[in-house]
Image (tube, rainbow, N blue to C red; front, side):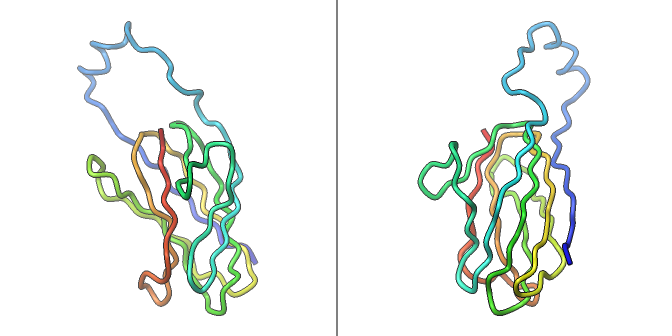
Length: 138
């Protein structure tokens, strides 16, 4: 049984700022690039599958990306997966899945509309468990 969640992270700009810069705006990233990302949850860590933008242990995605995180619980306990902002310039936002039973798959769909840093972590009984994974939106 799959668990699904959805989060939309948006930064709203004042209408005056948008209007003043409308003529000078250039597109820096293609909107809504879609990625399916495999994530393993073990009893000790959250592990994001590596791709072409991964730098060391940092998973990186372009601003405007729409990501379907596919969590595979390989641990011995039912874990929730939580995504939260960690950037200093960002409002604290988090979203989590329902508990994912051992051997089961859960999904969390995310739209990254602004540049910041994020963390994916496992929760056991509502408390952080194990080592989380770092994410950067550039």
